[in-house]
Amino acid sequence: MKNFPLAAALLLVSPLSSFAQSEAVHRVDNFDLPNAVRIHFPPPPVRTRRGRLVSSTNLNYSPSSVPLTRTTSINWTGTLSGFTTGDSTIDSYILDSGRRNSVDPLLLYAIMHQESTFKPRAMSNKGARGLMQLMPGTAQRFGVTSIWDARQNIEGGTRYMRFLLDKFEGDVELALAGYNAGEGAVVRFGYRVPPYSETQEYVRRISQRYNVIRDPQAFSHANSYTRDQLAANQRKESRPLTMYERSVFAVKLPDGRLQLITQ
Image 1 (cartoon, rainbow, N blue to C red):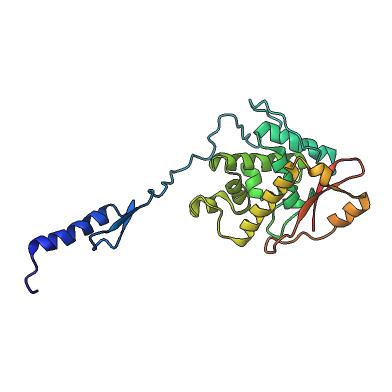
Image 2 (spheres, rainbow, N blue to C red):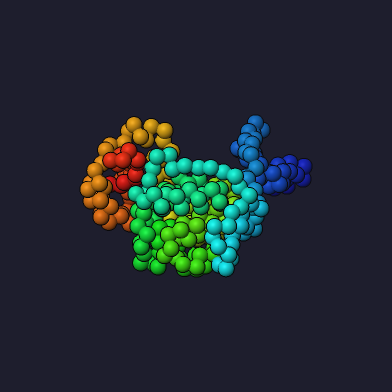
C-alpha cells in the first residue's frame, strides 16, 4: 500500500512517544501488537550527595597542639569481649579511643589485627606505620604528633574510622574500604567498595574478623594455645591482600583470654 493513512501513522507514533517518555519506569513487550504487555519497573534509586567531612557534633578531632586525651560528650562503655592484643596497655588504649569516638572497640581490634597483627613497630612498604598503619599525612590530619606512639596511633586511626563512618552514613563496609583505599576512591566509584582486588579482600577479611570476635560462642569454640604456639604463629608473614586468606579464628590463651590468629 503506497499511501499510508495518516491515522495509522499516528497510531504507530503515539505508543512510541509514550514509551519513550516513560522508559525509565516501564517497558512494553511487543508494543506493536494489539495485546501488548506493559512491564513495570521501579524507578532506579537516586543517590544523594553525602554529608560534609566532619558532620557529627559529638566528635572533637583535636588539632596537633591539643592533647589526644580530650574527651567528647559520648557516654559509652565497650569491652573487647574477652579478646586481647597480648598487651593490656594496648587493650586499654583501644577501649579508651573507642569510647571517646564512639567506635566499637571490637571493630578497632579487627582492623588492628589485619593492619599490624598487634605489632607497634609495623611499617608497610608504602610507609604506613604503627598499630593502625597510619600514613603520615593521615596521622597529621587527625592530630597525631608522634606516629610511633601506640596511644596516639590508635587514637588517630579511631578518629579516621569515626570520620569514615560519618561520611558513609554508618556503612561499615564503605568505611573499611575508605580506610584501605581512601574515602575519595569510595566516592569516585559511586559510594561502593572500589573494584580493587586488594580493597575488596581487605573489607572481606576485616568483616570476617569482626564476625568471629562478636560471636557469642567464640570462647566455647576456641582451641587452647600455649604462648610458644602463639609466638610461632605471630612470626609468620601475613598473607598479602593480593592473596585470599583462608581462615581466621580465635584461640584461648593460658590466662583464659582470647586472641585472633590466621592460617
